[in-house]
Image (cartoon, rainbow, N blue to C red; front, top):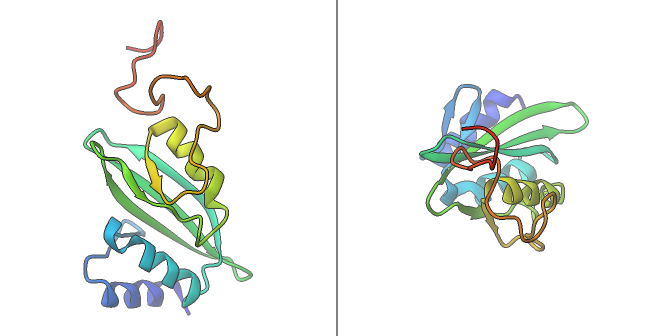
Length: 143
């Protein structure tokens, strides 16, 4: 099945899901169900990358999925509230999410509900703040 057919079926089943700029934009409340369906029904069996971006008014978490062995790729994004930055973990769906979610938590402070070991991975445990947030104040660094 081609990516555009997958996209059409997901949008038909989940009316709040949109296709914008070459990615599926999935609301948090549909995220786990859509991701399980992408894995189980459409064969996206590999999470190649998970990352996040701070847009000041909200975060976006980006998932790059692949269907191995044919190499079909699909990008999924979800918007996360800047004041209450949390969403469900994808570790139960793709084990590869484990360390990637820890990195996002460590650098941006986004909490992944249900994550089996959500703690800092790069910075010291007592480090204050999240250095990839736009509002992070660098001591002696950028303005």
